[in-house]
Image 1 (cartoon, one colour):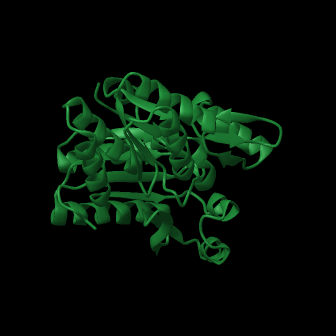
Image 2 (cartoon, helix red, strand yellow):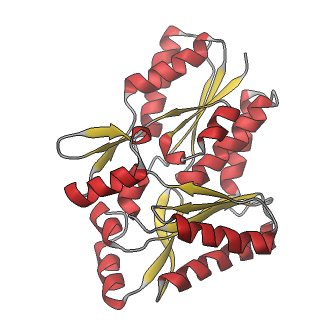
Image 3 (cartoon, one colour):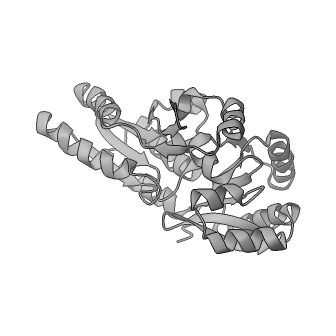
Length: 285
């Protein structure tokens, strides 16, 4: 008996980390006109080729049954559960999890289930999951593990640069006017996630300048708040991500991983995007 962590596929954690820390994952789905897939079951390169051929798909949250099954397995073993999910402003997963929790409690009266809104996605979500899972393996209580996850959210930031605004515009993730102005003037935005929604941090003229500005923001945060861990994100832009990792390693002298962003978030950002997620030692919010 202990605390188990349940998250969703938009955390895009390395499978080795999931296995090592015993993290359970429920998958969101991508839906084309005539077929749908769990995003964990489709390779990124295959997905983006499909998107070129079939257009931009929609996405959907995990099913009630899948969430119920995963929670029930943990409860039946006598474990407490901490669920940490994608921002409630981006998906109904968080809301559905609360409904499933009540369904579980009707059958298992003594079950202990807590649900946290990460207010983000990708490894900003993932880092809160990893920190919580480490604490759970150390034997900390459900309340302690939840507090550590929430604390990490206050200390983390996700910055990313799209290769084009086409996908954000079609997906409705930023205003149509902003997308049109950006394309017309060749302006590239540096995007972030705050209060659960995608927002524009600033705009520059080229992608190269955008990546430089993004890293400068990170270094400024590190200088002020200290540094925990860093992940470099990309969408079908591995070589560019590796170059950024090498540049950051040279300056910071720490281990930095590379994390590919999958179909659900990738649908809204598009191939060629690159980003960084990190958390600091002190609260940034």
